Length: 157
Length: 132
Image (cartoon, rainbow over all chains, first blue to last red; front, side, top):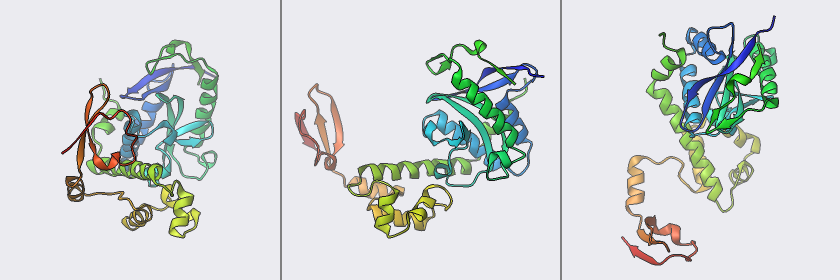
């Protein structure tokens, strides 16, 4: 059975505003769920901290949205390896709405070369791809980096 | 109200993790800047040619498949004839000897510019130059 999801504000920075997706029948947004689950996962604390710090750098304009990892029609944090200069297994899928508005989805620890072959990130990547495709067709009204028509953008969860 | 996991992680980022990323960003920005102003070497292909290496090897430096070690950074610095990393002491030595000029533009705005940057600059608009 499908349920509806809406876009919700996640974190504001000086340059980029981050949003996430929240299903009507879940307590946490997709991004909150990702950070909650990953923070309970021992052994990836440093990767998680670095992912958050990369997100802050993006938010404050130290790096560009073009530096994000490209994963088909959606994108992912942390940025591409040519920027991070290290191997990070974590993936937080997202979608660039504009150079100042990004919607965060969910993610996990990637264990295979391709997302579709990984049991952890595969389902998150498929859902992120579907949402990104839907969002590309939506008319999203942005004013000063803020999405104005949040309530009108409904996505199937 | 329970604190979000994101806020908790954000509040507790270790200084060494911040430093690692800050340094990475600084290095990448510096390399991009040098390539943008270098008269001959503009991209990875030019750099590979200058270092007499395969482009695929250079590409690994820039794609994280090969961490940028000090040795690698040294090679890039020599090829580009520019410093990528500069310690505080090196920076003081370099910029203490910089000759600055006071520049007053046509609307009276006053700014301080290293003299070397004016060597190739268009002299139009300059009304007054004072050495410091």
